[in-house]
Image (cartoon, rainbow, N blue to C red; front, side, top):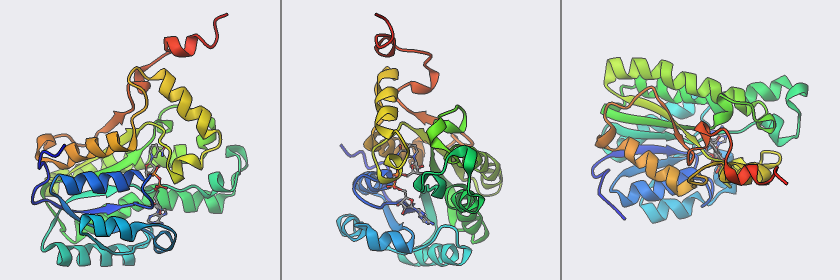
Length: 270
Ligand code: NAI
């Protein structure tokens, strides 16, 4: 169902790789709600992914950008303003990658070059995106910036590995930059802490099947889907949440406030 919540709003959406991607679902929902946007992803992901299909479906242009490269980001921001015909109202940062996770390196046996690469891609890129937008004065007043995160930033999930630290850093950047963006440009900055979701990045985590089933059984409403996340993001991009900022917002079916559920207890009681 569409409510025209984003009619006339313009934005940039990072991280749509394939139809499972949370950013893909978000782009579809933003389009349905009347928003227009530029799609972007790392040049390498463009070759592997199906982003052209999404661009066609949503009437969007694609600008490749490695989110760790300031040069790419400056180009992305200036070209997006040209294409969209003015300043930007919303930005979704939906980017995450750990080389240690990919290559099966344990948290206690890190390759620090890989750790640094993962931090740059997954967390510092959010600072780089915001600093580029801020310096170019590219955001409209009452605009909204959202990044996606996971609860391993607060609690221990051993197989989440160094991504846990990256998410803690990402959430901190949202608060720190959100202060300056709010004070100087009236722009809000939030993170959505999403349930485990079967995407390319999600399924890269060791033991993902157990992980997602456990979270589902623990949550009174069950796991939030990629579509649920897209819908929540739409509300944060809309004018209905104008003074929500510096928040880490859980979209997780209630998981983050649970101790134990009946469904989990049943597995331990004879
Ligand atoms: P995905 O694999 O579809 O998306 C990750 C995206 O990051 C890809 O499009 C990839 O090309 C992009 N990316 C990687 N390196 C990049 C770079 N240097 N520059 C620009 N883009 C780059 O997976 P998903 O799950 O949709 O991930 C989106 C966000 O949601 C990530 O931040 C992830 O950590 C977060 N998240 C995912 C959960 C899950 O269980 N899938 C749970 C909670 C948060």
